[in-house]
Image 1 (cartoon, rainbow, N blue to C red):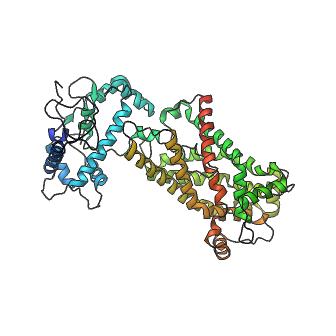
Image 2: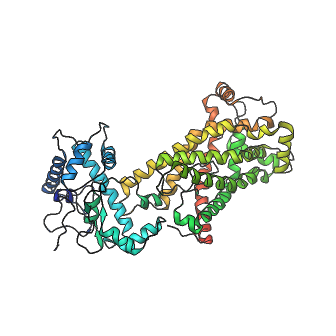
Image 3: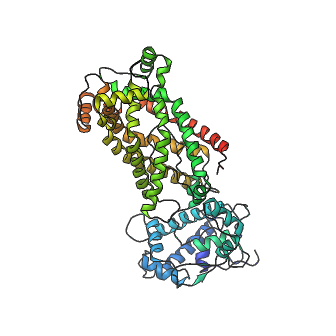
Length: 521
């Protein structure tokens, strides 16, 4: 290609990986070949593989200042400086941490190669996401649009400054240019050269596709709310998302309410002597109260969606400000802390409704005339403290649920990105639903014993002859009389409702979003 672009730094850095962007790349730019963001397929010959290995080793040796066969932070600082790439100490620590598989504080040759391959793949994903016109180049309009999608508004003149001049390293360091030929566009080679040895910790465009949305409603206490962009908050789109999510949750909970009530009955009444099965449980409910009895407790279960979601969202936003992060999207551990605390605050506020839901699900025909009558009876016979029975195991269950749910979701997401993300970070509906379903199921499995003890404590006064016991006493009693299996009573109907609940939530959520005028990404 005529007019080949000169690298930001040394040609060794510019051409260490294949111009097509594949982590299994082959020959690198030689003279005027390869460039302009052309995508290729790497069918490497032995000579090409050898050539790339030679270039990688040459780069490694240039960076290995003390010649000990490994790159430490000092090596990278000096070596990159000699190549014209100035990075802060924090950036260098991130590079070492990202590639250091054996945790010895430095990168050997294999770790260095693995880091470059993995990092270039991430850069390719971001480049593709920014390249709205799919022409292999990023211009000012595409930068404006991409930042606007993230809730950041800039002018086209500001975007041109981003293209033209970007300072790297310390504020006294040299000014480097991403657009090296003055065309006001950036091709793949320029993008890669500029960012190749610069750590990327959060990639907002990828995160936006993978937001752990509240549409995955399985009737449990999801503790990590949606994160809304600045633009969504300013334009009022956030409340439309919450309304759509709440409506989807109401429909999905109503459709799966018979399974939810069966779960509660099995948690409270099932034992070794009363081995309640799914068909037998449904038969017993219909025989006692008719088909309508299958939906006992659903009214308050739907009613508590609105206050719980609103309180959780407001608490989450305040906790994010308290954490003091300046990022639009929180890191994983920050989301876990903020989400868990917000969930705890929301649950504390609406917990009496949780107790009412359990009592209404367990009531016999004619026992209460409605929710208010049930609340009056509990208050008159048991006092105000009864509305907080099971509160401690409920709060303790938030951490394992949120932690495992989020960890599994992120693991599945990263696995998909590593194996299947080639030209886009968008996983598609099926992958998102599958990841959300699996992660939520794992979270429930981990916290289920605490949920069962909570439900039994909530139901103590409604079961004749049931002793008033503490959380620890109830655990000991269940393990002694029923074994470890007793802690998982009702698990089958609980898992049976996950897939239909998620599927129904998604369909209703998408339709409500269109009705409310919410743009889908």
